[in-house]
Length: 250
Length: 257
Image (cartoon, rainbow over all chains, first blue to last red; front, side, top):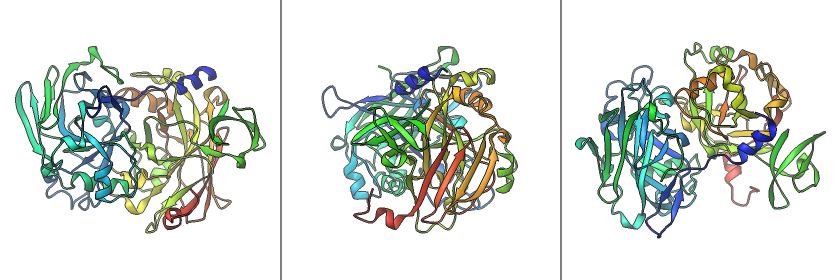
């Protein structure tokens, strides 16, 4: 790239996904980082029963097993997501999405609770993988692998965030059901723990739920993830020809 | 072009390298390097970092060289600029630097070949990808408590545009701690080259302007105690200065920010 073009391109770097905010008419919130926790759902953690004391893990995880879903994965509810030709099926992990309204660093659970702006729904898509040893970049960071929405519901409109049922339906059939009550770390505990070493910013979204689930969806599938107090996130999976570009969508 | 982002007189602005530690600010003033606060030269969008990408370093850590790149993502909150301070946790026994060539992507790319890869590079900068080895666990290793901490990724001083670096795969890297050289290497010893990394990443994810690839570090790790001045330098790209501070001092109320 010639230098002038390169510098201008960086100054005009693409924006981030905006989520309609139901707390204020016409408002939207621009998302920042999206952070997930693996092995935070009890059933997912149990999938490693008997394995964590052997190589490569050696012992159970002491700290939260965190990962990031980068900007190319973020798409709004309603998107048709193109799968690579090599990807036969993806795991759909339906999550409560916690969105911050204020920065959070070295915080207590009480401070974390007050920093929450609201909640949305997200689906963490992955190429299914058994090993948690190395970061699952190729499996978790493909374009469109983190559909979000349809909107952000204000904190006060949701009851107890640690008692929300999450359902995943594939082509109208219930494929997985879980609850935020089944998490090892509660919503505010996980925010507080992350904030001990990573400053979270307003707009950051933290995924509370499994990181993989037995719900696997294939090309052509229509997927709906529902949390009754918020609504339904939906998306469909297509072959690569209709490749969905990352970025803002209506 | 060698462009920095700095804060000076209450303005965040670009600054350009005049040599001899002098810079010209976008508002027309000429300053010494010490007279401004340095910010990371770009605000990284997505940052992909490489582990074990130099054969000598992989051997040093007792790993065999990987057959597929070992990549992990870095949070935006971990970056600080040139001449900033990096926090050493009070309970850390082994915290080490990693001098890395950082590749800045300049335009959207998906499914591109190695031959096309350099056409999508805006430029280069220096990263110091600190690790707190005490916190290593074997889950999504290297895990974020090791590699994703606030202040633990100094970046800069400059974004050097690609036209100024004719051969990014032949640059000397070095790190010194309190003036003693502890790490030396050359980018030609990467296992996966810059074009190979761009081709591999873009085969499954769209890269975009502002994305950053930290290409890994050669052998020569050493502990960095509180108070140490750590200089990571890459020929033609820059000399990135950083000072280690312990967490108690850094977070003590009333300390300078």
